[in-house]
Length: 573
Ligand code: ARG
Image (cartoon, rainbow, N blue to C red; front, side, top):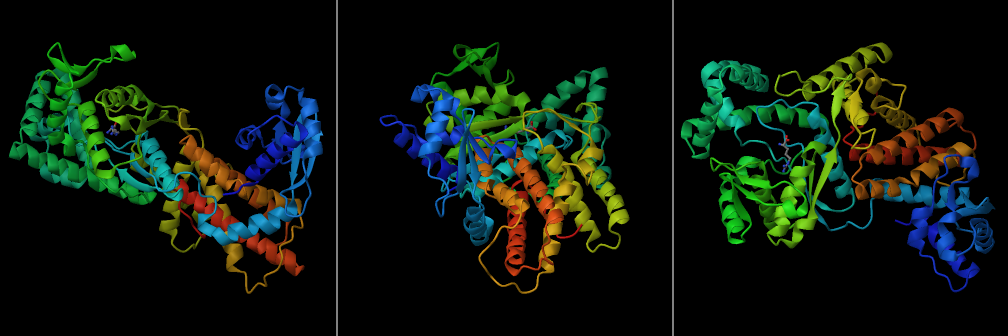
């Protein structure tokens, strides 16, 4: 996409060549130097010329005035209305005519395709996210992997990639030994069928409480897991049932979020693929015995060893991750395989990525770990083992209830009350979560997330509904040359024309939060326009048509951006 920033960058590069013969400055370097000044009085885009001082060997003030002199602004069709040199900065004003007659028609023509990131088309991307551990609580700590992962998927799809989303369920491992012991000692079929995953979590918690008093339980659990690994039919049946019960709940949550997976091949799927891996590691001389366990030594790389087989010969999380990566490369031939998990697992990924590299796989550098920070609610941290956790479904339910109460007060009698409340309640949680960069630790304050006034999900969904209600009332409109009649309109278009840059940066840094920020900028600009400009009852026909079509552009782009961060569109609130 030819963005304004692109056009200006190459024109600056041309000006530099004209003003300083013999020197050369690349347009792509200029692109990264250009800034959007926080104070629009300084221009719409600015080039801090001190960044060119080294290359051009001149003081910034001199560079700025020479470039301003050489730059051709104000030509018909140019995006730049004027350029000015001020204190070593080159300040640009974007032309209203360009915004109205180039940017707006482009959005209306490309519609849902407007703003797609460039440079990724045709890539195959595997994304591994959400991946909860079966029979353990699906808690708010999983919100990050679930929504960051899915947003990245949507962004890659928007960029024209083939995406495969995989839920690498934690459906294998010693916790199943514990679950089997706990179920046989204290569980009942009816109870679990009734309470579903909550019943399983209760058993899991009880196991840990009892094991503190009676360490023998841990040995029993290990034995049951060993039997499971050996294919014991009774244990296999129980395990399958635990997985099925857990999936029932996950799928309800995914449905609320509008999330689907292409594959649910969890850890158990790789169980029989670990044996050939171990043989291969041995053959390549990478496996070492360490106090009875098998490891890959990573000391030369400044990391603790990567554990492959425990002393009792059972495989672990990393073994299955390596086997899974090899399997996925063969099956999907990915260009990138992305893993979204909490930052607590960063070392785990660095370790086994290294093992893949040491095995001689040249695609090891296509494995990417995307970490994120911790979540607490009203200042309280999570504690999984004690059962003192906030479940994702409870958080969503609470948000939905609160939205219903607000709706009953503000817009009683609304159609599809349940559906709208779910979209807004769940959306509020998602939006709040994606409002800061992924590595930031987040403290959830539900009241803030649900407010209709702040920079929240409900506020932006409300703004979207507002665009729908304007468009619903439009009768027939006559097409015309667009005219901009107010600063609010040009501000709004200036935000709209940054969408492509935003999606590209979001993919480059794996930061869905850039999209959230863009949505807030767009909503704010639209609301200023909505309050200060007449739309439907504007008398001048050309202005009226422009404003209606501008509202349509906002509707399309806002809706597109919502889709990128798992926020549902509602035409009414
Ligand atoms: N089940 C793991 C957890 O809840 C996350 C799995 C992430 N994916 C992977 N391939 N290791 O911590």
